[in-house]
Image (tube, rainbow, N blue to C red):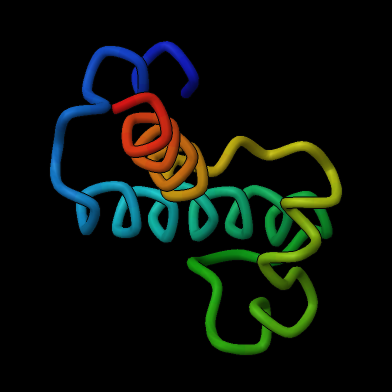
Length: 77
């Protein structure tokens, strides 16, 4: 994901927010299947595996990287 971000970092902010959400949804689905349940996850999975869970386990956030990149541009101007 870091390489993808570096290549597409000039995109709009909402692109990264949407992709972060999609990636976390897919990760929740994988975790859901690991506990032998079928189908896509529903709202309860957001409680079981909140965004903070992925952040604490080292999941790269495209939106945070974008905000950091934009801040870096403003500081160096």
